[in-house]
Length: 32
Image 1 (tube, rainbow, N blue to C red):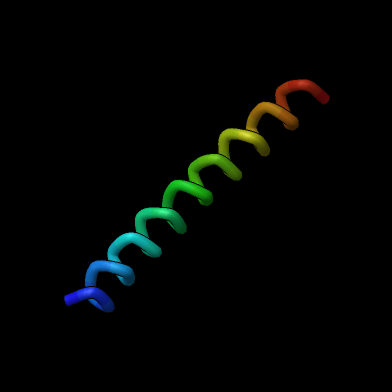
Image 2 (cartoon, rainbow, N blue to C red; image 1 turned 45 degrees about the horizontal axis):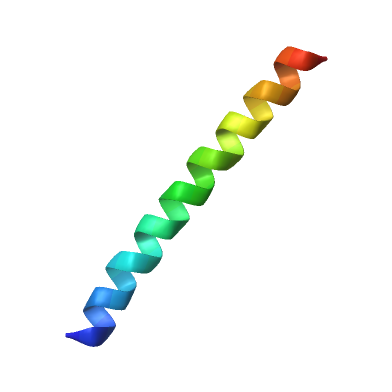
């Protein structure tokens, strides 16, 4: 149960990091 829960949490964090990275890159491209 704990491992399954951790995997789902890790996936959520990964998706969140990807979204942040995309937004940052978009902001950078708009600035230059």
